[in-house]
Length: 132
Image (tube, rainbow, N blue to C red):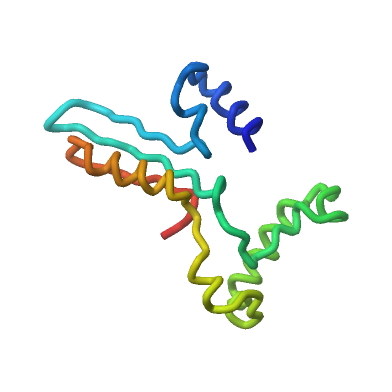
């Protein structure tokens, strides 16, 4: 994970001494404009600390990973699984474990809370890879 994070930050030309390079994930924020027309955009990293989930990724499983349409197959399997609501039909974890699952780490939650409380922007936009 760290190698992929560093490659991503290198691509974005993030300085080597940036605190972003020490974080677990690539979450960050950026501000546009000045008061009273200031916008703050917060980018979450919903993959770094995400718990295991039921919907499979067929693109990572052989022989699908070698197929030219492996990503399409993965998309279709996730769509079918979600459409049939299989996670609730096929219980793979008990109720207590399901309640303990998370997407953001405690560190990222603390960062998000601090960024929102300390923000002087008129609009705060939270960007996530998960549809809500």
